[in-house]
Amino acid sequence: MKNYQSFAARGRQRGVALFVALIAMVLLSLAGIALVRSVDTTMSVAGNIAFRQGSIGPVNQAIEEAIDKLFKSKTIALQNQDNPGLGYFALLQPSEKPNGVPDVLAGDYSTMAAKYAGAGLPAVTADPVTKMEVRSVIERVCSAVGPGPWLVTIGTCDTLPPKVSPAGTDNKYVGKRIPLPPIPNFRVTVRVDLPNSNTVSHAQAFLR
Image (cartoon, rainbow, N blue to C red):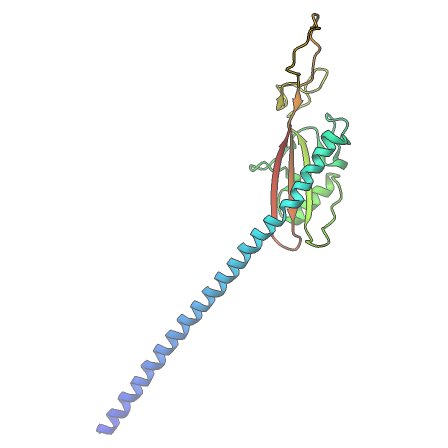
């Protein structure tokens, strides 16, 4: 009788040990899954930071190209007319997102690419090394084409005063002042994409 009781007690102890071992294995499994997820998140964050830093160069290049089109080579000759082929719009585009991004540069990659191409904007080629795609839009900060000889007014455009030399002169102009055009401001929005991923970077600059 005693031997039977001792055997039953040892059997119960082995059952408890197995149960504890199973719980320990479950806890270790959960800890392993949490560690894997933590590593994946860290790698994703590191990749996004690296992409954002890598996109600084293409963004700066796009802004420099906009400066050249507007002020240096002046390939955008008529600033009061749209020129989608050069990525230029004379007015702020409708359906602007709350963060200030024009609609043609907003949304997921496939949707944005379709809208961008449908607007007749310049073709995009990916960088052969980084595979990044850069798209940019130049907008004159105006809500409507204003009246007047310059088609730019304070009421319809965000403008600066005309450039006037502060230097004095002995031969002062006595008659009616020569009208000078107000200077409109321009907004450049740049989007950098890494295709086949959810990685995207937006940047904006104001030119005046």
